View 1 (tube, one colour):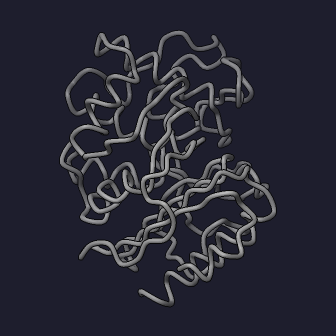
View 2 (view 1 turned 90 degrees about the vertical axis):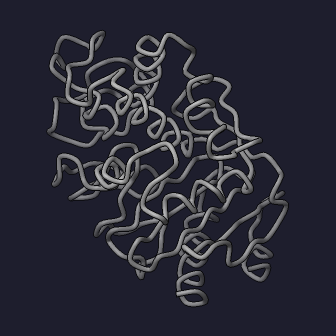
Length: 274
């Protein structure tokens, strides 16, 4: 994939392509740590679902500490950006289940809930629930569960392999299937960086490709494709129909370069390995 990364206007970039059989291709420094930005959210979401499986939390119990206008919003709502919270403040910006409002504040509240329920800092719980058992040796969280994780491509390889297999060593297959299925389907909303979507489909912390247009994946990715991208210049997706996954990390803020490069990369992955 060197021919594709060579044209990226970034200081550093690295990527890996996987199938259920293993790693198909890599490029760049696989052990270089990158700021994940919003790729932190699906990692935090996975840890939260582990806490749910352990019985520390319930997906459909009302969440305490939210604005009165959002009384009754649940952990499921927060994970799916359907609680009506403002993007960066613990304030109401809408009503529950009326519009998909992408909320960093919601994930900060999730981190507080998990920390209280498990009686440990969220960063430690994330490490013990996800990073250590999956062998994500360089991954760490220093700050917000919405955006402050760091990791290398090498850390993502075992995680993506597990996701392609339909389950992880720490999460049941049924839970992963629910997490990658649209929650509160049909909600409109803005996909950051790509504008209004009539159906802004989202799972439990995973963004779903569905039929969104424009989008940062390829038009040839299946609607079942799930993943996330980050404002730091990072992205990953898993296409369960093509049975392929890709992670690409860079240290250039998201912008027009990414809008152009990521769909091209995704199309080439599907053509070369599909």
